[in-house]
Image (tube, rainbow, N blue to C red; front, top):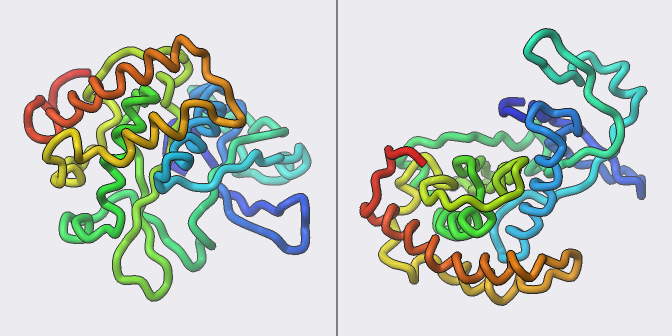
Length: 245
């Protein structure tokens, strides 16, 4: 699949068996962007889900050595040549259905983009991307289930949260924005980023499965309002969207 991590769409079966199968976009440990990207994906996606944002379900996917050996496409393209994907535990994000029934797109014409069911969630995702220091542009896919006429957005690719493999928090207000600025047309002020600002402060202070360092927790909560105000200025036309980060 496209992208710097060279992920693969795979049909996966639950260890519980009983025909419980789903499709996952799987990123391997030896992907070109580094193993830390997998940790960022898992932590970032679960944080986003915790504040109610439309992200895929995640799972740790085990890919066996035998499957890799007998599947020609399970390779990582290197600068010169290629290497087989590394067996073991990998990161997986669930595909929205069966590829035979559901097709996703990473681009929609303006008329269809305006009609996306959950378009305002891009504002919530901007809050999340500023808080977690996503140093990549916001990535999203659009899909619709059978019988539906309007598309839904699903926010994908949290690998560059926490400044990718650096795991620090530089202040770069233009990063994390979605390239189609039309999704921010509803922004009129800082209130346009609610309820997500409030959810970050109330729901992610002490996650049950992860203890944040107190130093980062204090600085993160203190800076999110400042960062969001910068985002608000940019979205409302107060910033140069073509400028360098």
